[in-house]
Length: 259
Ligand code: IMP
Ligand code: MG
Image 1 (cartoon, protein in one colour):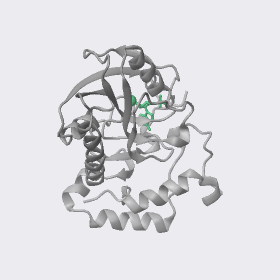
Image 2: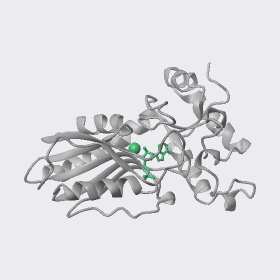
Image 3: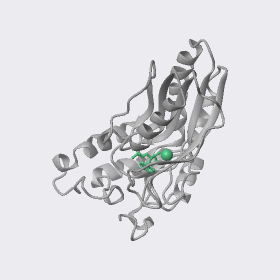
Image 4: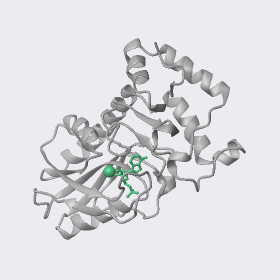
């Protein structure tokens, strides 16, 4: 049986939610302020919207509903496994067309740990010769707010000098991590740098991301301004294995996580 506290958003719902979230105060005077820590900002839960989402849940194949409801810490599903898969296929097709036109194989650089599922699903659908490597860039600690000072804690094995690099990220939030990493790859002599991020939260951007050479920006979904988990994204290293993307129930956050 589905957990009746669980709601699933269709793509259309996600669009509606994203619009509420872009300007929550305009849509709902009682809505929370965007100056709150990300995990305290909640999606709107009007009875009508909630009823529609529950109807969506009821219409899911039972295996999908059971999979979602088994994860009791999730309040809202923003993108289901099927929606993620379909979108990753579209991004992979676009990337493959661009990489095919290059004279030499590109180096796809995943940002560990968050990009591991997205990278694995993406490159399996890019039918072009390429190299894969990982870097580790850390700035978050165990909370939901970035320290703003990323550090490269594990570097590349592959030489990227003179190569086209595609950085694969789970999410671009303030842009600090990516800017730091792009500067690092440029120093190593990458001839051009593209970015392929699963999620993009433009509302939170503090640093504009400067691509290098003929680099392009690819993204899966525009993410509303909430702290999300699943499909690689974590809270305190948990929830990365969820095959969908969701918003955690407030009680799942540790008391001191907003510091
Ligand atoms: P930025 O440096 O602020 O752009 O943050 C980028 C990194 O923060 C991402 O690679 C994620 O690891 C993490 N991050 C940002 N937003 C979220 C979120 O909503 N959920 C989980 N991790 C996030
Ligand atoms: Mg990351």
